Image (cartoon, rainbow, N blue to C red; front, top):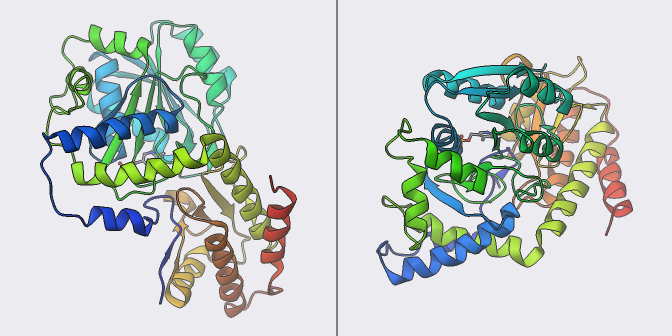
Length: 380
Ligand SMILES: *Cc1c(COP(=O)(O)O)cnc(C)c1O
């Protein structure tokens, strides 16, 4: 059976990239690596919509979050954490571990933090060194109004640190135009690569904050060193340079399509996916959905865990369950990276068959019609 991986990370890796990853080992302090890394750095700027440096780290996405936080904020510093789900909570946990003073603005799962809440938090805490937030909250499917957040934080001395791990490359994110200081992401979501690389863009304001932080609580993730090495197209320690060789091909895809087109395509796929599942009696879970993934709430009559289990077992289609207290009542499907419209149609078709098999009344083809209509009506 063919496996169709539609989880919000990891996502499928295109065949041309898999073949590139299978090439023999090469040396990392070499003109060959520097040539590849040069091209990768240009491609990363395109995907991040920035003219600022984007650092490549060898870790999963969380490593870039940790790197951004410990370098931009001194131990004991005050950090406003905007929390709308499981990944927002990660900022609070990071602050705890590194002895920072976290001021948490928390909203219920499915809701987004409003710009007014951030504005008030900054008025109450003018001494905050940073604001940490999430572009796409992967546990709930919420997308934050990052443009509004950027405008608000730019008027203060704080830096804005964005967890863009599932959102960057899948939903509109204009790092420079929106004044986002440190945007973090990982390789295994919208960037259609295996896990192992993480990235963080660094604005001028962020570079100032980093240079003022005399003793960041890290050795490996010292961004001063990483910025210095980047000047000579190098990294402080051995990079995952076979992954970087594959990344070059992934970034070339983004550059060829153009970010405006990528964002618009993702928006269409998101709208069509939602219409498809709505035709099966499900409702959109997040109040402010983003276009990297769709999160649907199931009617009480459907056991989500059983449905997802059968989808995988009977049809090879892997979607993600809800997390924590939403396990079994919501589910998550990605449309980021190389996932295309026909992958999504397969997921809908499989869901129809499974629901019928579970005894739920389903008109075969109803979700496919809704998907196709929405896609065609929104065609560019
Ligand atoms: C996946 C994800 C992460 C964690 O990334 P890892 O690569 O597992 O470290 C962080 N934030 C968001 C929003 C994510 O979707």
